[in-house]
Length: 216
Image 1 (cartoon, rainbow, N blue to C red):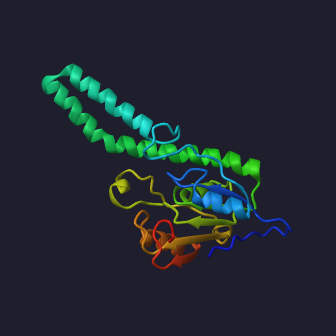
Image 2: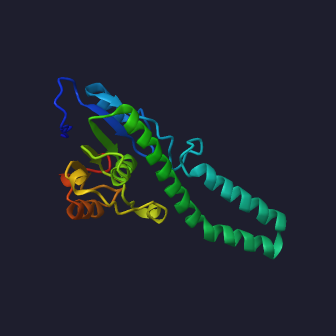
């Protein structure tokens, strides 16, 4: 059970700015849950790791990368073509890493605008959105309060190769106004990384025992 905290004394429900996850979008289950209970703004970040139609995601650029090198390899043929294909394979992970960092920067810029426009009482960030929220705090766009649900500061498995992992530098006053909610059986975000971050940065941590990435 998460209680949204706000320092604003007001008879109305807190105004929430929700930063959604990488694949959930602005109309996912968490966004709907918040909208049913609070005055909620959930801007669409236009991001996905897999959908090339989401303009802030990496996939359209990655597909263009693969098709371009593939066409060049077929055109060259022979040993040159094999060399081109090898070069493309070697460069794919660094290219994806770069595009994921670009995606993060674009989402942070979008949320900076949303923070100024919506003037929320509290920010709620889920997974990718939790990482975006941390970046917003780090860059001075928001100073809390914030509730971060399984913030994706890193990733497990193959995605760890390309994930824009980072170590946020948070002002102490803002860090004191952040609550992190993390499942100890999260199969997407490393539980230990989140616990360590909270310990070193002074973030309040609530552990959901048995909780996965969805906190259930």
